[in-house]
Image (tube, rainbow, N blue to C red):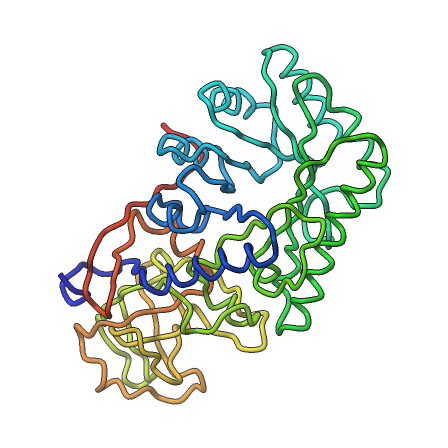
Length: 378
């Protein structure tokens, strides 16, 4: 079976590019002397996870308890749930821990710390906790130098035990170029280490110092004082990562296979069956120096077609046109032609699909890898 045979639109994963990306990041972590704890949220797929992790048991990072439950059921035992914990989710955490999962949770406030402590006391369970550090003002976390850091730590009692600190340099996604990413990586490292040193000076053990985003992981020059590196989209990469400079377009392993369904000759448009339901609405490159629309256009073999982007996307229709506004040569793309679209955001595009068609050596489909979604099992 080849890409000429399967239904469209379909999510296509180039296994050779994906595996190369995974091996490169393993080498980077090893070279910096830290453990690699890959984030599995991009793929949400066991076969992809096994290629990202350094062992079938982990370590790994997840963004939902559903991910934790599915991956644990397939033998991944060392997991960090890297979204702030809430009281309602603690029974599911306990069920995983009781079943043998080494699950760590994160939090950034005293209320959550007290809730975890009370739950552990009431239920007789031990839950390792990482305090999330705000290293760049991006989203959530405790500033490394804030008095709140020690306050949160002091609220962890009984089975709620401090296991370390964790940060994510989310502002690195605003970077463009190596210099900005290198600075973001060093700031991320320095803030996590500062938080750990302050906690240790106050008498707390801090065995884990966890950092990571794909741009900072790619450009980090030193991780002195850090114990583990977390990153996720590096496996597939995407156009946002290419715009930052974290990869080249040739490193993007995920694409959307579409078919031409018609044209608008007077507008120079090529219409495909790949709308936002297949690509997602993510327009992450719009704020970068080069706006890639809804995605770059390749031929069926994955070769870029110069000047063509997906300029607009309706629910089930994708509109391909020239980036410069000129008329595309629609005679090159008759109805039934097949093209591949490189996405802005691999996580968002992947979430639109129940599986990946896996290719090697061009257009040959060698496997189908299932993925899952959602936040809980029905």
